[in-house]
Image (cartoon, rainbow, N blue to C red):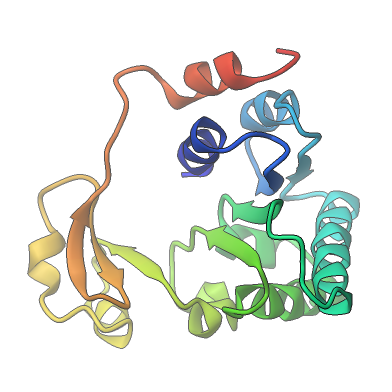
Length: 193
């Protein structure tokens, strides 16, 4: 998920237009992502200092946007979290509380920040699950979670890889996949790699 989102962003926007903050567990993906133009913030899921630096970058951007009468809309911050559940479980309560607070603030429609986070289970996503205004919900064996997320006919998600319910517009979408591995495509997008 992380690589797919970042590839989509980098193919459509210049590095001067988007500031990336990525929290990812895969060392290979982190290495590739850190070679992208624009000096992205790339944090290892399991490293508290990395996660703190990512939180600080988001906080700085939120503060900058709050202080400006008319925030500069040329540069957009995009935060991508490879696995929010794993991230929240990897750290102590203080860091997790800081993370939860900043993600809720960043998810507000007026924040000027886009937060994209994968969560394998609803309970593990914390308060971000309620704060997220747009959701893609894929197939799950937990029908209670799907019902809690508002999926009206969960059986329509079964059997086709990449089929999701998109909210708030309540429609089924199909996610595209590339023939070439995403990491290979990202490597070609990198400025130094």
